[in-house]
Image (cartoon, rainbow, N blue to C red; front, side):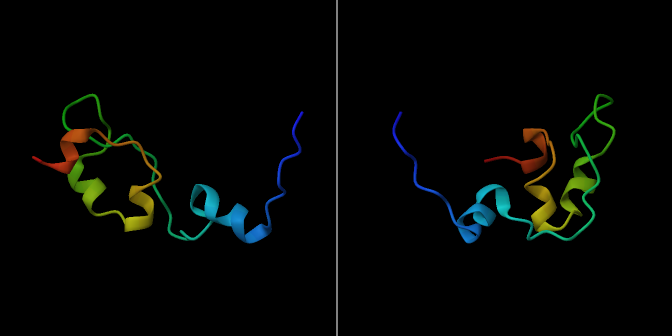
Length: 64
């Protein structure tokens, strides 16, 4: 088996976003309709760092 390069602490912090978000991120899922407990408006009100950590339906991103 090939020896893998050991990662330093700074490199490990950059994986999975590091712990740079200190906001409370309420769990989702977020979306449109009765299947989703949270709405798209709730998703849009989240801080940017939380938007990357919750489940969201693609309808919340609007038309492309």
